[in-house]
Length: 144
Image (cartoon, rainbow, N blue to C red; front, side, top):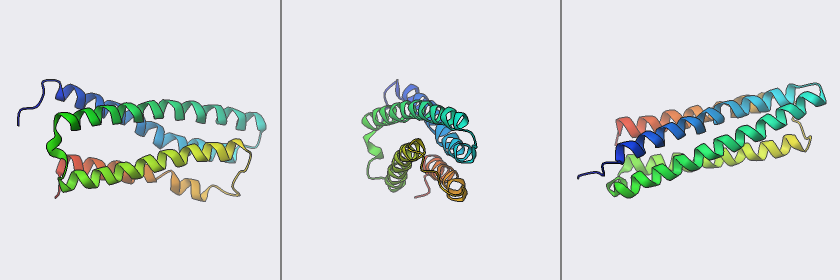
């Protein structure tokens, strides 16, 4: 199958914006931990501002990742129905749910309902790593 001349450009942009999105997904939960552990109202206010700004940047990254991903899929529709790609789409759905859950945490922390400890947030912080490894392995290795 002959792919569009722009395919590699769209793929490069898809990967670049995926990196932007994941940078936010890796750092935002760490900000949640700092927010909860802060002892001064001024620090909590500052973390809240940082969380909202980072969420906006990573949402732009997510939207552009999806836009270029859909462009790639439109150019190369043969990806549909391949088992590895189907699993990648399932992981992507989970990643979107995680992204939305980050927005929910921003709202919880903004309301002042702080958890008693940060144990759950520390585990929550590791979840994007699982998605990233799974998606990369599927896209590169195509194990099935």
